[in-house]
Amino acid sequence: MKTNGMVIWLTGLSGAGKTTIAKTLECLLLERQLNVEVLDGDIIRTNLSKGLGYTKEDRDTNIRRVGFVANLLSRNGVIVIVATISPHRLVRDEMRAMMHNFLEVYVNAPFAICESRDVKGLYAAARMGEVKEFTGLDAPYEAPLKPDITCFTDQETVEESVAKIMQALSCASVWDDSQLEPAILEYHHDRRSLPARQRKASPTKDAAYQHASLH
Image (cartoon, rainbow, N blue to C red; front, side):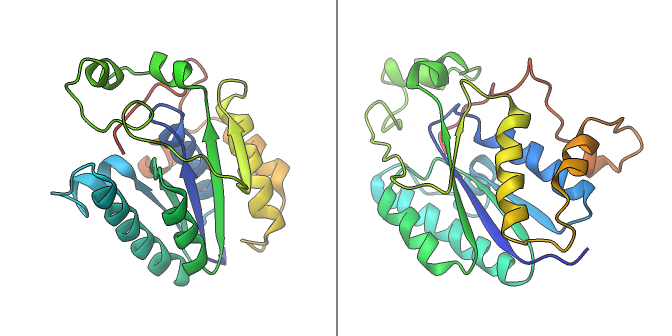
């Protein structure tokens, strides 16, 4: 299916649900046979930004690198899902200005909820001083002032959050076939016949939003 490139930028605290939403959204878009790539903070840090630390300058450099790759992909018709804390408003606004088609999604959850989802123990390590410059504790997170979409992951299911994004993509005419409801319904069908890449991210409600990272 023909796709108009777009960057969907998920920003929020560690544990807010960015990666879960990104993987679920990726599955849904792949089911529509769309060209989609996920740029996840953990993977970016391991590869593209290996060697960078967590100072403000290094964080901003990391985000600019992500933005460069995302912009390049989107200009070539790819729907790019970026899932990274990206804590600084000025740099996120810089990314919006450089993209031809940009959707900022604020993945919003209270700090206490994010901390309760911390299966890796990052919040605990930060409170004990073992992790420095942890966003939300000793490093600031600047919430978006006017995001295109806000997903309240302490109140919504993953499917409800993803449906908001799908609706926005449909309204933006990112693909030719803009039938939203069949796509949402298809997500719940038996996935066993799908290729491995399309099956890889299908989190259940119980397992949803149980991921935290530094990125």
